[in-house]
Length: 78
Image 1: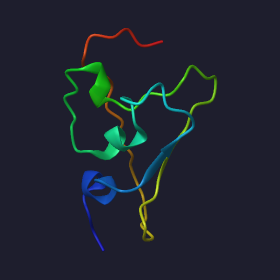
Image 2: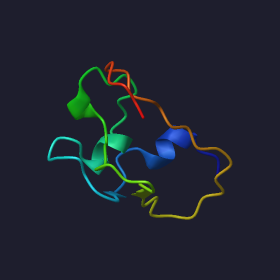
Image 3: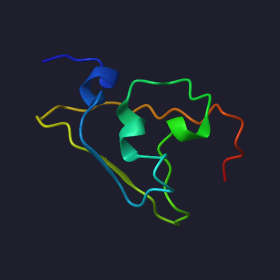
């Protein structure tokens, strides 16, 4: 089965190691929005040396590539 990498994770259940606040939900990571113009449209954890994001794909896939998009709201990343 061939699927685009983006479509596989779109709107799937997610868990973040911690959520920065009620606006930076883990589900923001898979909502399809790649141009995050406000800070509340990104998934963000509390400061951590080992943050993680779990995306439940709900079926088995052979994953060959994962794309992560950086914030675009002007916030300085660490």
